[in-house]
Amino acid sequence: MEFTLRKRKSNTIIPGFSLTLGYTMLYLSFIVILPLSMIVVNTLSMSWGEFFETITHPRAVASYKLSFGSALVAGLINVIFGTIIAWVLIRYDFPGKKIIDGLVDLPFALPTAVAGIALTTLYAPSGWIGKFFDFKISYTPLGIVIALTFIGLPFVVRTVQPVLQNLGREVEEASASLGANRFQTFVKVILPELYPAMITGFSLAFSRSLGEYGSVVFIAGNMPMKTEITPLIIMTKLEQYDYVGATAIAVVMLVGSFIILLFINLIQWRMNRKFNY
Image (tube, rainbow, N blue to C red; front, side, top):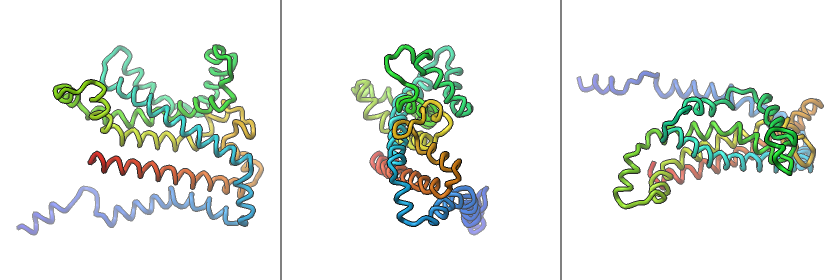
């Protein structure tokens, strides 16, 4: 009888570890590993000299700096304002709340090309917003950051929202009853709970921004050495049938993204250990 009970307790709704792990590895192999490995395989047809010359071309290096730098800035902006938006949507009730909550997901549904055209028109020197500034926004790195901020915002908001939902007001009330002011409550009680979600939202927004093409290509202006992003260089090489050169630059982006995301995950792991998650 005891053996039967133990056997029943070990059963799960989904089949056992071996079968599910097999399906997981098979799915990831076809969807992730094989496509990424083909990038490396295509690049191996180049010599080391050709590879190094392609990836260190001044035009390519300038695009790396712009792509990684603008994605980093946009991700940091989204972490700050995305957390504020999530806080407002969770902590307050006000007219039109459902509409604003739905607008957060609009960058997910809107085609990126449409978003790029709309942002370019809006921030152009003669646009509704651009005409109020004495400097250019469209066709500059600033315009690229705005476009990347637009497409990355939902990742932070939707990642932080569930954490705030589970973090009830009683936590703030308990902190206040112990003599903490609002700033101390936020820094020492609320913020540690939000750190993992904020880092996750940042990594998602950063990753999404790094490979963005449609919403950026219009507002960037695509001036070599100034506002030309790396995905555009890859597309240009593909249109010129330089597939090997395109995959070489793609390898740089792949390795750079992997290193940065690994670093972000290590930070998140250390924070989880520090705050005992």
